[in-house]
Image 1: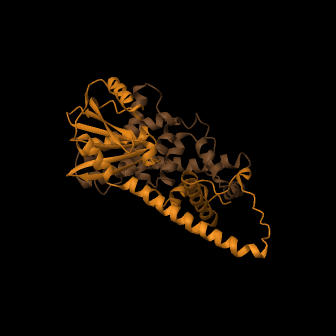
Image 2: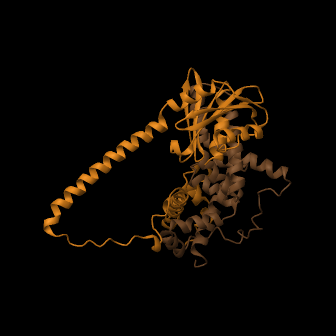
Image 3: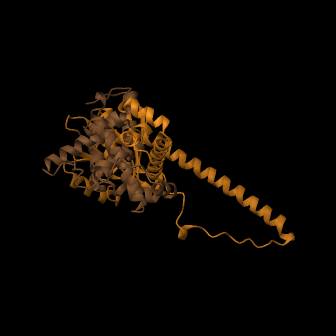
Amino acid sequence: MGSTGPGADSLSEAIVGMRSRLFAFACTLTSDREEAADLVQETLERGLTASDRFAPGTNLKAWLFAILHNLHANRRRDARARPIAVSIDEIGVDAMPTDVAISPVEQDVLDRARLEEVRDALRSLPAIFALPLRMVAVDELSYAEVAAILGVPPGTVMSRIYRARRLLLRRLAGGRA
Amino acid sequence: MSDRCAPHRPYIGAIADQELELVPPEAREHVQECVICRQEVATHQLLNRRVRSAAQEKDPVAPRAQRRLPILRLPVPPWQVPFASIRLRLAAALALVLIVAAGTLVWHARTSPDLAGTAVSMASGGPQLYSGDYGQIRGWCIRTSGRPLPVTPPSSLHPRGARMDPWSGSEAPTLYFTTQSGESVAITWFDADATTAQRGSIEAQSLQGRTVLVVRGQAGTAVLSGSASSSTLWAVAAKLVTTST
């Protein structure tokens, strides 16, 4: 089962070292710490037992995120729950015009916002927007990597990240914009 | 605000993220020339940085209630200054020596290969109790050591037995398991207090050509050894460190 040797050990160590990043990703995905911890555990087990399938030189973080995302999708499918994809109409974001410039008020609010407020605003975003923004801003993944993990075209990732930032600014401004 | 900006605005986020492959040339050209759009690119980049900081760091601005009040310093009489200063310096030097000594001890306790070697030596003694019933093993460990086992092992492991060895004025239990593929895994638990275990970590060591993992968590320190492959040991270690932190 799996590979052995010092190289395998350092890869295993790197995989386990991703625990906190995976947990943050899973929390955004599930909004449930228990479920997130469970997902991370299963992801680590899958990653460790399949580490010989990881291509050296590629992005380990993206590989693990993809495993976690697939596990989550499988669980939702198994539970016959609704998939994570939520219609933009449903969450009322479509009403937000994307061709309007960022207002001076929004700019000012961003300059003054405390990190705690940014954190709260980020948590309040629907996962469909928060996930890609977090993956790019925090986990430093490329649009192509995010697209591969989420199983959507890169253009969709671009659109969701743009909307996520506009929505975040709007939440920070709290209707003052 | 220019109407010329509107068709290019959806690409501003991608430009801010340097994802230029997705951006049409006309949008790139427009943003290069347009002050308003360049400002928006900067805002997107600032937002990225703030999101990253919010996700990774604590807010540097402490709530008002948590801020410390400044300490009022009363003037010291001149005849007390030298003596107080000497006392302070001596106390500081003593504290420094104690901190260094304690740090060295803790460092040795945490990094010493002896813990792994001790565990492997203990595990090589074989089970004192043979049982495939984890409940029975747990009961035996409690009766023998007077303490519960820190963490329930992964359900993928089949219990095979246990042994108890004296260690540092306490008892260190070793639990024996087999994996579904018939490999053996031994988990030796050392007391949490004695090892000053804090946040979860896994340290790999090689003893006699085999991987031995030292897993530290709040529940204590576990040493994983056995004939199982390195990846199997890592999978078990990941489970232990996740459930004990």
